[in-house]
Length: 432
Image 1 (cartoon, rainbow, N blue to C red):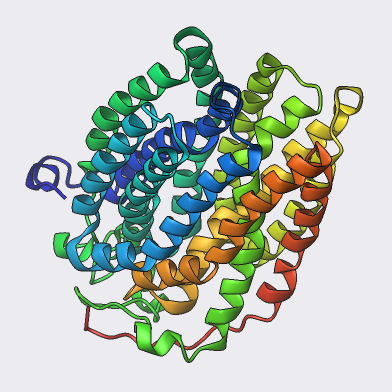
Image 2: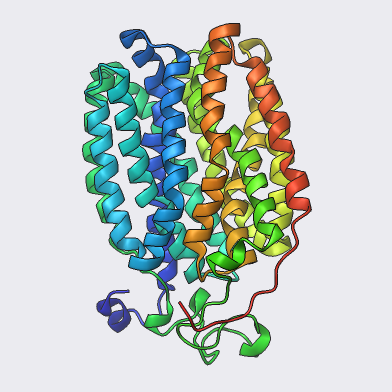
């Protein structure tokens, strides 16, 4: 937290919320360009370069593999060096990856640019902001993460803009423009990041160590909260491998992320293949994005109110049902698209919130970055194999119908894994 903030804003909005807002903007930028926006480049690249859907899907698999392998490393680096340095580095690297992708004429260079983009995503973006936010918030962790994830919803509004740029400039020049935008805006949004509130005289949620100015009648009403600066309850990396809940969380994350990785690459191609126009798809994505903005914060608020684990459980059922609806969409059954937007949208919002907050809730924030990274890394096969298999399925059957039906069933198994999780007992420790 800058010194001038403490001097001139002693009684203003808790600084953690400004970190959340910057995280929202960062997520909107990354999700709109690198996640949803990439689907816009799929068909133009396939037609110009003559590559198969499986070959292009492998690019997403490479990004997923790279992100999975680097997640524990990037989490450790954020734990060790702080989120702001890693966020700056990630923005620069990802911007360079977008510029490199604009030059591709061969598969090896396409895959190399995918690796660079994945490296930028792993070092900055979600990792840096989420680690900071779970340390700045405890009671309001679901709301904070939900608001940050709302940036993903805002990112959907960028898809029509990216599509217009591709139409006007071509996909290569569009990538160069997006590279420059991401570099400038991404660095500005990363600047306010700070690792944790204790060095500035606060506990999570803006509470004071002595309970003053918290609005609590008794500061001891939160006995699990550390009462002195530097305290950080939670397990070590060595300890987490001896906790059964850790492995169940990996299985749950893998069952959900398999569907998430597929929707990233093949949502737009599936809608095109089902008979929807690119203009109509852009309009749908804008509506879906607006719905996600509301759902992600609403789900976070609901999780803080009735339990984040309950929302996480419900998200897997919603993902499964939503995927079945999406598999069967067509211009003649457009009502299924609305059903998909609501049900799958809730599932996606709940999954994004739960997958992050439950790691901190169950294992503490002491080594949150590394443990969260390990969860992603060990679930990596699901996100790596899925885009390749779906691309292959399209090359064989000519559509994505069967693939999304199967993925819907797989994602629903997350109910079993989360349902079996039992919360471990954490003890406060002054070690960092």
